[in-house]
Length: 122
Image 1 (cartoon, rainbow, N blue to C red):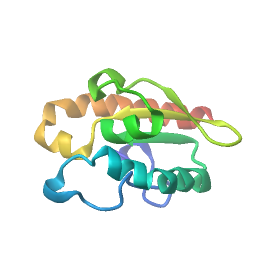
Image 2: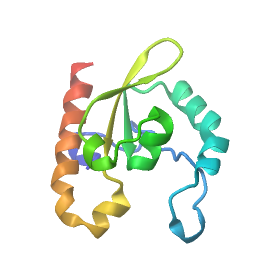
Image 3: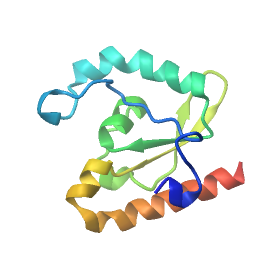
Image 4: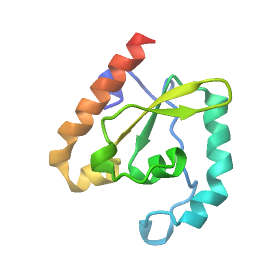
């Protein structure tokens, strides 16, 4: 989907809230995400993106402090604060979820088209 909207790995920075895979590929615990939060926040500050895309609810909940589920959150523009500005942020489905639920790809595709539009505005 990144390639289809005109992005590639050289123009998109991909990071994880927790830089290791929790046992059994489970969602990271609140303790694990809190330990790693300062590191991911600093990465975002250093990369200074035009748009921040959260893949799945775990990352959006952790960094935005929201409690909504991914179905309610996805496709909705939010704001991520950094020291000097607000970064446009959007959540969409995690790729692992899309592999298990291929019918949901159409919604993620809409989100990525929305991301492309936002990037061309900037």
